[in-house]
Amino acid sequence: MQTIKYSTMTRTQLAQKYQVCLKTFNKMLSLIPDFVIDAKIRILTPKQVSLIIDHLGEPPD
Image (cartoon, rainbow, N blue to C red; front, top):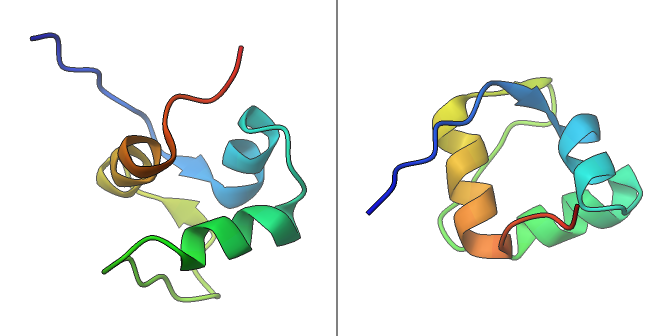
């Protein structure tokens, strides 16, 4: 099994990868169980990015 390593990203960068606006992306994040993020935090850690992608699936190319 191949492990993919993700780098730090902002919510805006991830929203762009999923081709949605930031407001929609924040709503998508609120649907992830046990994922709590402070609104003041701008940069997501690689672990948080991995959790988001695991839940939402790979972003379209």
